[in-house]
Length: 223
Length: 226
Image (cartoon, rainbow over all chains, first blue to last red; front, side):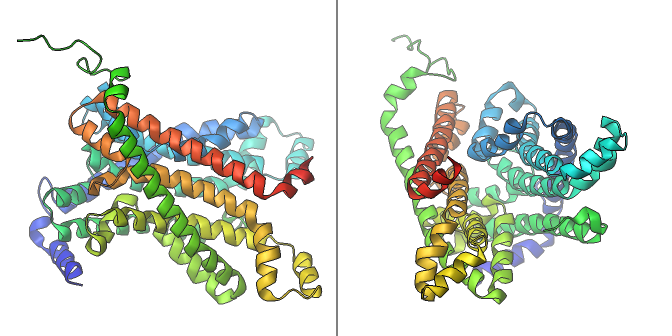
């Protein structure tokens, strides 16, 4: 319990919040990294997945890319990027790695969601004379929205985790509080940083939960 | 003064045969540690997950809390998880194993529970009608039928564990992650690339091994497909 109170004291110490390495700046860095990379990954992955899902092509790639993403260690990719020319730009390796690891869940979930749309509904829409574009935007996309959103949620949680590990390779974000704590051999600081990271991740997860609850019934899906 | 050797190590190239031959011992030790940490965490995770999944299946009230807790655990980033366990375990291999057990728990419980829930009710009723008790029903009917789903979970958990072990480098017990970490600090390209590739090789090999084991253990799934 002593460590917990010490960690709490570290967190509530006003001296630890402002400044170059302060909690406030690290929190903001983490938030910006996660949000920006989530938007970029969605812009990259979702159009590809939706078109592939609509055409029913590239399924093996879309599904297997998630398994490949799981087998490749985040930390290894971060360090490899750091040693390439990308590493010269301070947040370069972090941003590239974040996007690389957020794309697979987005791609897989959106693709599977598009393919799981009831074929009867698709054929009815075709029978009504809908063009491919109308079919995609007015039928398939709305019906696959729960799966697409689930992918975004998994990607967001993954981004928070990857952004934390980025601190090991010199990236910014809340993970830096933890790595700095290890370097100072300060257990309270390590635990305080971990609590911040865990809280951040849980808030992100809770946000998506709230969005799902507030969404109209058809967009929630049957889970 | 002798001239420095002009080999790939001196030129700090990504791919370097010299590195493999001169650092064989270090690489082997790292691989062994990597395998030990992975195996320990997945096995302990399995031993804890099976009773939890069975409990969640048998007692309706238990399913909600069990799934909620494991989901929350899975949301916490790995580096934070290891850090939260630091006061309990200190800088040790147990810390890495404990953290990874908590992760594999989520994947295993979810998949085993899904497998148990997918056992057809008629099959259960038939077994009960033949006079099977609850224990025999579980061991001889439900668990074997849940095996494909459970093995799918085990494969995901193992592959994830192989990749997450590297983060254990923060406490000095990261298997190949240790080599990546030290290679990063010294800009040693060959070491980082070799250790990274070995990580992926271990993950793929473990996945294929478990897939083979699954096929051996569930011959009926193949017969049905043929």
